[in-house]
Image (cartoon, rainbow, N blue to C red; front, side):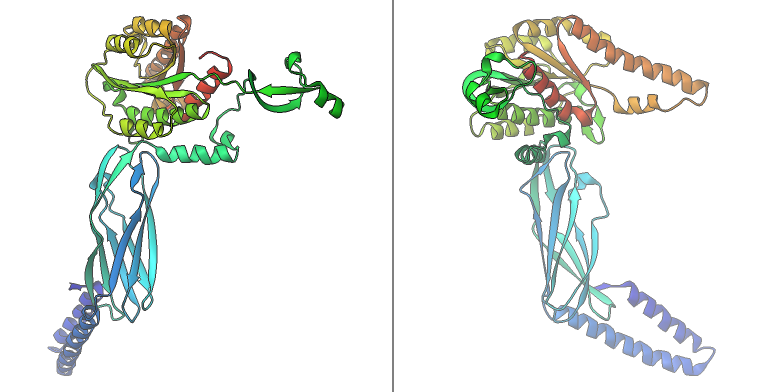
Length: 436
């Protein structure tokens, strides 16, 4: 039994009434009767709460959470009390969220029920443990409350952002991928598999003109064929200390994992084969490129277990093992990060070697907070010095891009929040230009 705020307010009033009896004697007698009635009311309130087992609560959520996304959790409360009650509901969420506001106050009618919902955004992969659901019930009198411990402890695995895959899938079905910022890049193929007939526009191959359709429509019509070249796309993820940097609670490694999962999905939708490579101080994970059913689940499980290390990455081991395991020329999408031109120059020989054997796309990150700082005007001399230093770091990032371009290596400099969209657009652009 728990005493409510109303109980203590009423008790203070009674004490003041009894204390006033020392000044005016009849008040002491009135206070005694009020105190007796108060205790009877408390006993009645407690009996009404404890006479039946009146509350049940259930937690409803997905079997797994999506990292970096808003995941919905619902709590269903059902009352067996034959009278209205007020509830305070506290869910014991995983401590890693450090949230103390998962506290709901609701009212239920007699034998009624209600569902409350909230959202959680995890920023790390792993196992998250929920505790019990604590429900405090207060009757109509409201002097005491009863606690119910409901639900069972629950462990939820947080996987890479699979909710983003569903978002892409639904928008692809409705042909609204441009809402996510994906450009419509189309390449006309010459495979024997027919796709559609369209109106002739300047630049179309005259050899594809459909003369029968043109005669019927009284204008030139051309055949469009599907290009069915299946390429191998490997997401190569650096797990070294350079990927430990955090942005909005998530490390660069987690952003790279989410982007690689989405890129693999899009590549398989484009009839390409998707594979996975991770490395740090040594060559770590290798998943051969494939587009077979169930391959996305394999990639999801492999990405779930990846963890960043605090050591330097060994690009030489990456070159040796890729040469051993990947014999066919493929597109390598390398997720890493360079602090400046000097850090890139240390790895340039290995990047050139990878680019000779495969088509290499180096993806590294622009400091979003530094970019926002540069956009703000300086107000004093110290501010100007800080802006000069910040612009020097930003210039070195752009210098890395130009240096890689001089050596025939494709690169993509992007912010973590735009990573998935920019990588997909770059992949579609390279595919349209037949660079894979």
